[in-house]
Image 1: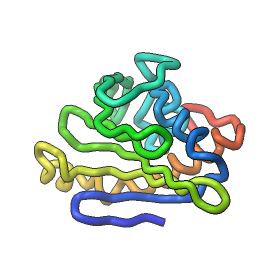
Image 2: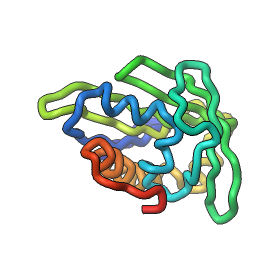
Image 3: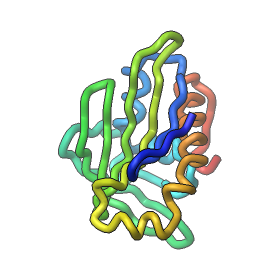
Amino acid sequence: MSTTSERKVSVSRVIPAAPAVIFAILDDPSMHPVIDGSGTVRSSRQPGRHVRLGDTFSMDMRRGVPYRMRSTVVEYTQDRVIAWAHFGGHRWRYLLEPTEGGTLVTEEFDWSTAKVPWVIERLGFPRKHPASMRTTLDRLADVVAGKAVGADG
């Protein structure tokens, strides 16, 4: 299921696991390349480290050309919410809600906090992100289920 609201787009699915199991993957930046459905996240600069509110982490990225992205954890509630922001101010957020059969996981791209939201809109990211977000949640479910998922698909 995907939804769009004022400068936010999100995708949700139920993953058959406890929130703590899923959160332990999301708060470990070295797992981001493994679950990334966009194909842009290549590697973590701080492998095997769990982050908390206020922590920063850097990722090697590639969208046409390689670059490095530094993020700061701006929201953090253990086993429920984690979000990080880039230099542009936009946020990637994961919301975890226990539900029958596991955890409802919502990935949200929030550009309401962006310094220049019109640039994000002009580049078409809000339209493009839901497909990648669905793939990310599928890959997250595979990792939780113990299936081998490579960082490159």
